[in-house]
Structures are given as C-alpha cells and as structure tokens.
Image (tube, rainbow, N blue to C red; front, side, top):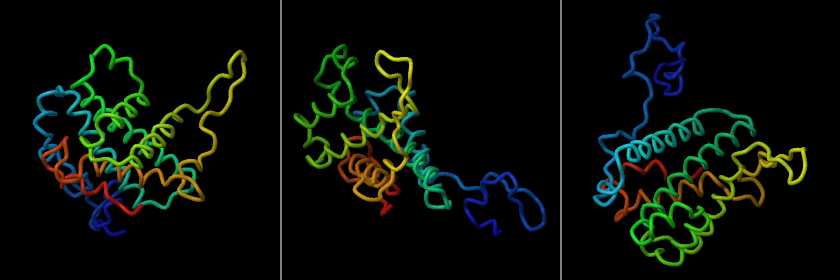
Length: 215
C-alpha cells in the first residue's frame, strides 16, 4: 500500500518501501491546529484555559471521526457506533455554547441546575437571533439531544431487578428509512455555530469548514 494513503500512515506497521518507519510529520494529523483555533473575544475572556483546551480537543476528535467515516469500510454496527460518538461529542459542544450565552443573563446557581433540554428551550425562546438558528434547527438539536441520551447500554427497570436495553437498536443512528441523518445534522448545526461568518464563538470560521459535509 502507498504511504500517501492517509489512513495507512496511522498504522503502527506503516513503513517506507525501504522498510524504514514513518516520521510523525509523515502521518495523518487533524487539520484543526490549536494556533488556528481562535475563539471570539467574549469566549476568550469568559472561558478558562481548561475549557478552551477541551473545546479544541473535542473538535479535533470530531475531525478524526470524520476521517474514519470517510476512510474505512465499516459494518453497519461499527458505522452506527462511530456516529454515536460523533453525536455525543457534538452535543457536548452545543451545550457549552448555550451555557456560555445563558451565563450572560441567568444566575449561575440556577444555570448549574438547568437540564440541557431546558437550556435549549430557553435559548430558542430568547436568543435564536443570537445564534442565527431557525426553529427547525432547534428541533434538530432536540432530536440530537435525545440521541445523545442513549449513552447507556442499559437501565434498571423501575421497582425491578431486571434491566432493559436503553440504547434500543443501533439503527437509530443510521440515516436509513425515516430516521434523522444524525451525523450530517450534527455537522450542519456545528457549522452554523462555528463555520459561518459572524460566528459568536470564533474569529476564524474557515477553520471549521470540514464540518460541512454531504455525509
């Protein structure tokens, strides 16, 4: 296999034709660089360094998941689990965005006890113009939140010692049939928050172009 193959470059066994190993600069790395990850001035002032770093790492992970999604031939189950991780990571970023803006007009104690569902509803009522999101976008975010809630493989039945499968079937993360194309929907929402000009969260919206994808 040619070492120009980006995914091949990530393998421990990847070598040059002469048998020598690849250097770190020859291996695939995310295009999102920390030096390019320029948050808006309000975010820079409000978010502490740990939160800003975690936000960057989550975006870096999303790019890697996208890379896997595009590069690998996956079984339906593995593809669904990849999408599941994409949704979990993406929803955590959306929640940070909402929490950040809500903190400008809601008491911190009240905000700390507010569920994500309530945060979404509050922002839909008061701040849709701030994010430049439509009602349909907020409905999509609610659907993604519900999907994110399927992080547990099982839950205990009320008043019972038995357990039920909370994750239901893996195909809930599949775009087949009438299901939400969850991965594309997540990329579209994140692109609207970070990738468009005038973003409230970054001064370098072009760094997030990879979020806009047809799949």
